[in-house]
Length: 285
Image (tube, rainbow, N blue to C red; front, top):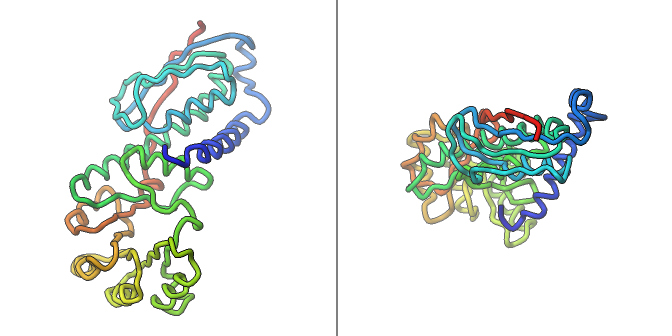
């Protein structure tokens, strides 16, 4: 993680505690009814499918929040591609804590690893092109920092984290302002001078207006074929370019040769399947 690590981890604890309270509102009646309070155990964390591992610190933290004595040992590093059957890690400590935290810890790890896996597949298609792969704000409510972190583990890059993080003028902003030029002028007058102004355009006419008004970045939204290629040509040297709009692993190749600066994909976070992992072979120690 980067400079915002401490803030992110504070947020992580808030969310993880809420997730644990959701799963254990009073007690884990199953574990508590069959396991002595001080019993200790050991379990294996195993990958059941091939993919990229992301979220190991989160997995460990779930157990630490339940019982600081639980030890988690990982055999792979964050961002490692693993095969089905790989022993990813081991968990040792209070058996009640292991069982009570199992599902919450796995839910986060599986979700984050799924995002990292899907992102890695897309990022590899852009290797050597100079085009950066970006995520979007199409994330699970309250889980954005986890999901965007997983994107970076997979080799992608983060777009803005939230509405306070950058100026992006989309169709509704433009409509409310009365046009592309008016929206850019008002944003330029209001936003701090250090903020770049990004504008979503859907036609070549809107693109020309945005370029003339001094947009720093133009988001070419759902533009296709000749119009898209012409838009990239017109913007070259005048503004950074971003392609957006239903970009997935299946159609990414269409955009690879265009020479844009960025390609953003909501699919990284809203459509990636989980990576199947399991905590198995729990035994007393």
